[in-house]
Image (cartoon, rainbow, N blue to C red; front, side, top):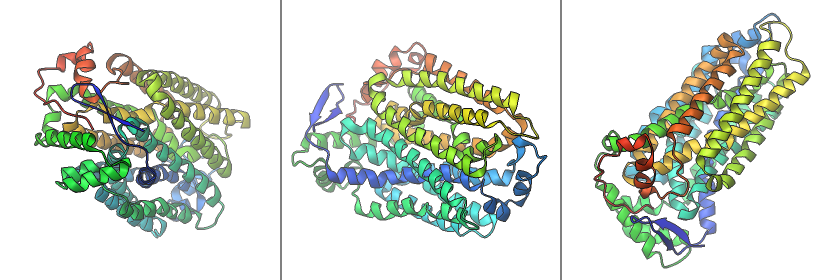
Length: 507
């Protein structure tokens, strides 16, 4: 299957190559970093709803949970309980900038290996935890792993794949994240009744994808682009032949050489990001990460079992409902892989805003009218309807703001600022994931049903931003973004001062 790369002139140039078994193996191994990230997202909500875990580390929350007259919205409001979940993302924020430097200087493969080591240390500390300090330190190490993996894996996937499959493989990373969330929900469902150490099993199984990444990253190759950046030119040519499955890779090899030379001319990419010509890409990438979190998705995915218990499900039923939302998440992400290059980015984002807004408003109305602060929970029918609405919300997010929040930042930056710009995107995502993770249970306690109106209001802002400020990038060559997208946009064209960036071949 020939791959397509875009040259500086904006014309399409076909390269020889095909999808090899080795590339598929490399993709699966590398994407286990996404599996690890997704597992960490999903596992914490189930574990923090398990009585054995709460009795050992958060006895005050356990007492509130089982107190007959306790406020239904405040059963789980505890800063340390929230810190258990959210400290991972604060650590990932810090690690992402270090990982950006390591990734550029030492390569994607080593960065993934470092991530796997952090993951393994974190799993040992959390699964073997004997006090709250130990499990929080474990979550911090997991966060370091997330920061390194999220920086290296998307770059690895985009550079190892034939160019015409990079968009799909980028979203495939998000697909592995959703699979990780689903697997964690299934594990929690079965370990909830394993007393008294079911929570240790849930946290310990995270070591499986961590070991996959650790051992697998030893077997896979470094990317040709990374090897050439590290001045291992002939080794880069050899690897390119291996992953393309053909001997004649001269055209693609020359384009990689040229792109690396152009990128090396920029000595300070972070400084260039501050120039007006980089403002549209930077603002859009940062806003997409903020909006992604203020949809409320991670609040729901972190605490889905807690949320479903709040509206009246028992522990097992709450975990089973989380499994259902996990399945919806996975299959909806597959829809995005199929549709994104056909329908475009904007239409998916705008449609999802309508879908998420309606779902959250109806959930808020039901809880406001029917779920009182004390006493009975929702009726069975109402609780099931809430689960359906949550699934509708997750469905909209999973084919839009979830994958596109990562895809769009990866395609709007020019080559010379792409790594630095993506580091800003990752760190912004981790910062606001931390904020939401740390604040959600307290917000649920204080705002009660109003929490869903809060997130619905943000969806309106997101929709307006998309309508007025986010241009369509489907089918636009990366090096043609300035002329075909930014200079044509009613607002962003005012930032397009004369750009002295050289003509770059995009790889």
